Amino acid sequence: MNKRSKIGSIVAMLLLFGILIAVSLFNIYTNKSFFETSFTTCVSIAVAVGISYFLSQKQTDRRKQKEILLNLVSRIQNIVCSTEAYTVQRTTDPDSLTMRNRDINNAIHILENFGKRFDISTEVCFIREKFNEYEELIGNHINDLNYLQESKKELKRPLDLIDKKLFEIMLKIYD
Image 1: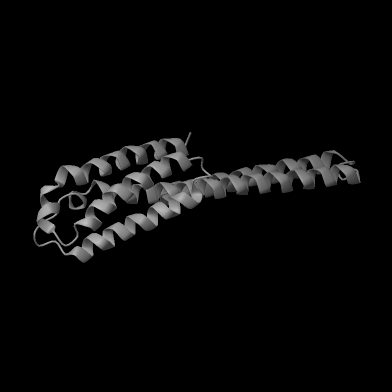
Image 2: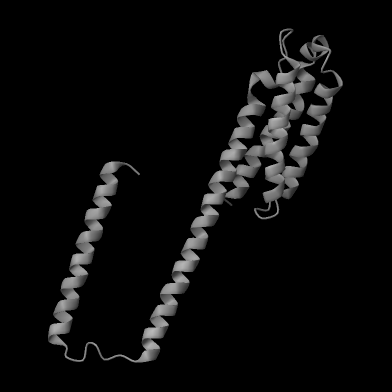
């Protein structure tokens, strides 16, 4: 939200609040039985306000969790789609391959933890399976960079499948 829209919303709220006060004061002045109300009416209003606040706050928390999960999925997607993920050079440091794999593995682990809550468990299992293929190929040939350099297609195939499944997760989260 930019500064102009914040100021506009504050002015609108103050204007609405002022109108409500003016109407209330007019109603109090013209209606002598304005403050006469039953205890049950007051309790029901308090309960309604409390429940509506609780439910709206809960929805806000869930929406924020979805945003964080989407950021994580997007981060995994950026790593998986980068050319460095499937293109290995003779000068590539094996430690950088291991670190990238560890980073992806940790992110997938977080997805696994939230898979049930957001109904994405099957997609995350598929991603884990394809990542394990990718990780195994690199792990088996971590010291043979020439082989990894020639295996561009084999490295890219599971990453492409992971990328597609990450898109499905993004769509499913907001379904």
